[in-house]
Amino acid sequence: MLLEIAVFNLESAITAFNAGAHRIELCSAPAEGGLTPSAATIRLAKKYIKLPIHVMIRPREGDFCYSEREFETMLLDIAAAKIAGMKGIVAGILNSDGSVDAKRMKIVVDSALPMNVTFHRAFDMSNDLDIALETIIGTGCERILTSGGKQTAIQGIDKIAELIKKANNRISIMPGSGINAENCKHLADVTLAKELHLSARTFIPGKMEFKQPSVTMGGPTLIPDYEQQQPDSKAMKDILKQFDFKP
Image (cartoon, rainbow, N blue to C red; front, side):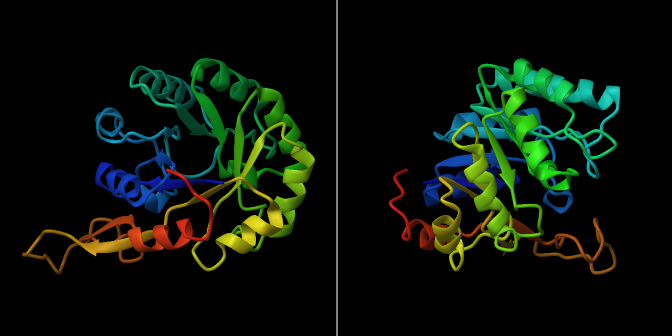
């Protein structure tokens, strides 16, 4: 079993490392579901974190059907991650009809070598999970992050188990979304998954003493302006206790 923690800034990555994570998914923009982090964040993560780091390659919020310029951006970000010495990248591209864009994903996989590629939860937005599974295997991706086509992995637990059986060790199926200390062991037992993905997110107070009450940067429903998101070390350790995890 391997525990991958999604983080959205450098300090959170260090927190996850210190708490016992086995792998880091490095992103930015949690309110958008994760976008590509800055080149500086990638380089400093490599400096301070002695774990495999997988970098999110997602040029914008919204859907996963990209223009030529957006795809060009993704390829340049992949090159930057490779130069920085990252272990892998996380990406996903769909066609407008909801099928996996096999042609572009093959280019992504080839461009990323020797890094490995995780196809992210764009998989759950595809029009047919079984067909998408076979298409992604054909592109050479190493794993798929999925909630089984549902909002959370627990809701999609039966489909995840089915996908793992169909994959038959040709690709790793990694459950993600809504995983916590209360459900992780049940999820692993039912699906037979060998990797779990979660953020274990919590919010801590920021360092500002003065707080401007009349202005918000992202709207009231997004991350509070005067709090910082980071992994919950206690929650991570509670999960680690339930498995024979070895950092």
